[in-house]
Image (cartoon, rainbow, N blue to C red; front, side, top):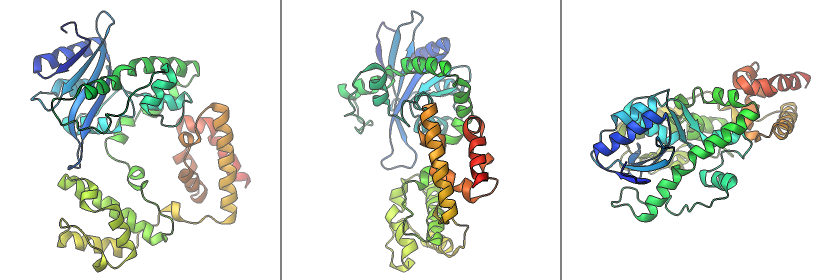
Length: 360
């Protein structure tokens, strides 16, 4: 490895040596930088790698994905269940790996979820986690920089390498804490289907940017269907969803006559017909928009109080245990509790929540 700690990978032999090192070590810290300004699917710019060598010395690498490199062996490592991959909040990284290779990432350790289980805040960011554990300040001023530009600036290189530098230490520290708290099996259960869930944006992620206040149930249902329709077209055309139809245009479509809404040049007659069909549908209503009656509201408050109490006792953030929308579903839909509250969550508070609802 040329005796260098930091190494910028631009050739196939250099990449092959790094892949060999990861294969021997069976544990690697990863991150990516990418752009998606004009495309739906991200364009991978660099992959950051931190791995210890045979002398137990950490080596850090930047793989330049704009060079003509064959990443087949690297992607095989990402999918290898025998090799531990440590990343922080890696949903988009895993989406990129899956999109480029068709291989499902395996044996992923997400330090953000590890931190959730250790009571270090809900979905804490990497720099805040580094500061919390090691009292180190990370400069984030390169976060939004142009990763397609070459050569990368010294600031970009430093930022990129630091993004993986602490990951193995975080993993080791939090894993030890997790095992002391007897939560390691819970964590493994949480991660069992993690890759399958994150390789595509979930319904929840697609809907969360929209405010459904002051919308009637039919409008809420129409917005939901328009969002999913837009997503399919944006994927097919490989353009950012906002370049196809903006969020405010979707809201206008359910509030005004279709002929009054100015849509972009990309919207053709076929798409107009599809929009008309969506707006004419009498679809099932989104549950979160249904008003709770007075009894259900009291039940929701009692349930939230119970979850708040448990979260303090167990040192978990409430949002990580159960969301308000899930509590509403449990209250409104009979027999839904055991479908929504499963595994370690049911073990922790399922029976208590069930009894509380029966008593109301």
